[in-house]
Length: 106
Picture 1 (cartoon, rainbow, N blue to C red):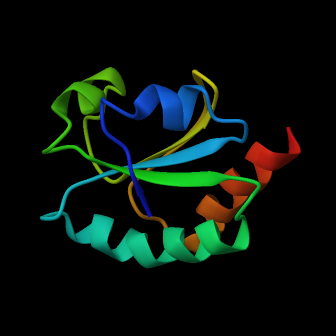
Picture 2: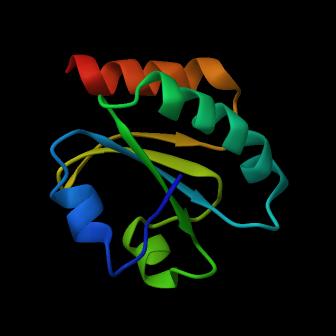
């Protein structure tokens, strides 16, 4: 899975030809760890249609602040520089699949 940092954010997210789903997470966060395999599965299913990346909020505090991340996990669907949708917390696969579907069908 793509690791997004402040150094590659523009090239990987805002300048991406396809929509991007960004997972804001931290290694100490239990729900974040539960979310990871679901995102991996969806990243594989939607390969070529949606790019999936992770932002470690401990290592990238500027990006966490830019997203106004008050709690994690926080999954943000982006098209260019525009936030299309946000899923807070880990609610299982259905809301995430819906987020991916909306992103490719809008």
